[in-house]
Image (cartoon, rainbow, N blue to C red; front, side, top):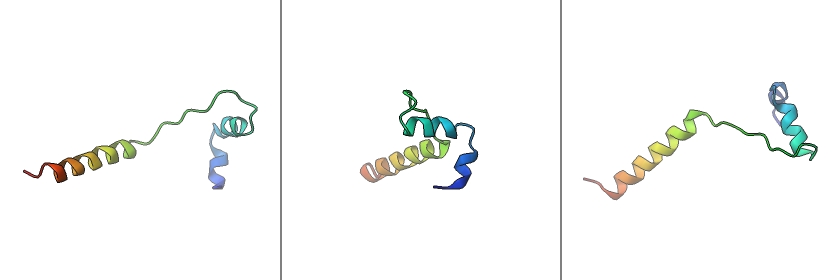
Length: 52
């Protein structure tokens, strides 16, 4: 595990859930890169299907 994760303010919430002592799962927000990558891949697929 990367040690810098331990410096995250929500690290203890993640560990508590992983150990079973917290009933609620932590929620993560993805960086916008993943949303942009999804759109780029969709456009590339569209371009391959409808090359006009």
